[in-house]
View 1 (cartoon, rainbow, N blue to C red):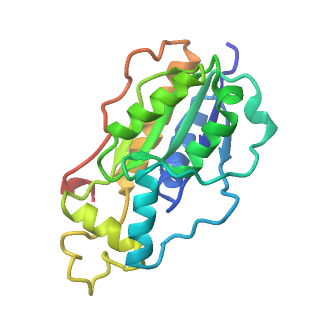
View 2: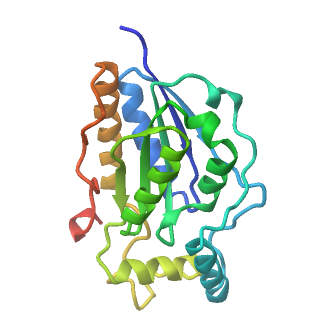
Length: 231
């Protein structure tokens, strides 16, 4: 059986997407696929946390308007032939992140034309606008876009929105001394979600190795979300 090749292109602002991808790649490699992981690096550093309430509001407004954040050149290997490309990143104000949008503007046609692309989304909870917008852009580049893999933060609303905003602003809402701690005990994704991502990687790899079509969704969307059992 010929070895299948998967390219992962990702951007992670607060390490949440990166943590999930570490699990995903472990699962993929157990299924014996070849994986190359390209992590996008902004030309100008984007600092996490942002550091203040006013700066957080400003960035939220800019990302809502789909501001681009230019990224450094990707490894030439990204332009090789791949059986699947996974384009991964967080949701920013309902949209793909600025670095991912910048990549699509600059290299979208060269990277994705004629390729099968699976969006991998880390989000607070509102992923659909992100996915539909990303799918439209990828199709505009000539890609075949399959159903996404989505992980949303497990803390229930409204606490996850409040908690994420405070975290971005430089606060520590999950700290034991914080008033919000009992409603927001952990920032981001859970350990169980990282384990789920590992399982997703293995199942995805097995399907790729078997030559199965990805036209039909392989996983529930989101993979795991909501409920205190995830914390």
